[in-house]
Image (cartoon, rainbow, N blue to C red; front, top):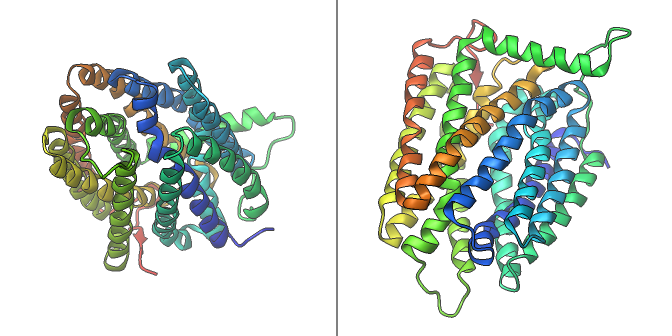
Length: 418
């Protein structure tokens, strides 16, 4: 049954947060302890994933701009569910790598299309508060996903992965009937022009829009540096806790319980941080957003470096929680920054370019960080934190340009308060 767009988006982010968190909570302990992967193999999986995503992101974004936002989201969810099913049944590196290739392909259909769909249905101004509200709903649902995932993992590390992947497939099919699509307007196709030609033209329009607006170019550069920095941390942080630092015993409970506690507290901190930010802050144009993101990235640099050099569990844990909370705030702010003043005809394509820039950073930085990690995981984590430094220069350039928007000379105002 079709819902209004705001309700459908709430259902989407809740289901997405719950099901995917069931998998992500146990993923690291599954591949490190059950499959015995090395630091280099862990980062190589990330490179495979991001490399695939990189190749598919813009073409899939063009599909969302040309054919249907909703269909793109459904394809992404169903295909990702199949990919994680392969992961849950894997016993070798090659099969896990195959699952990452599959996920890279299908995740690219979902990325960008969901934000573009929401913006089309509600309008750019009305959609902005839903970036943060959606993150809050997704975090609450993810907290439930952690609890269920950990409970199932005490039986078998594979069980939450397999059950969640089946749930994602069913959920994806259901969204076809839940999500309305009334705001999307297909570009009229000239008689005799094939659909793939229209896709190519949409991509070219998106590239022209990026090249025409210097702030948008800087945004994509920031996305690439963010990707390079997060790749090492996301792939090696849990390994660092398990192998270098060690987890304190919690009675006779499985070590997976610690990961549930860590993820659960991180999510709660993220929910609180987003709530405080939403009540007290607003974003006025590109320059102000850049200032906020510059502070966020400075905190991330410090927290990741501290985590890498920490030899004490509790210090590492505090740093890890700080990284999680700050990144939780950063994501919707960055989404709002990207979506200022975009042409609706190329919105999903440019959102995909942002995700693709992130993937470029991850794919480019992954192999080097993996090699460093094989020698020293703490060193790889410190380098991951420092890779974010050049983004500070890009923020400075965006600030210097003042309040000039990506698509209009007037200041864009993003109100985050309801």
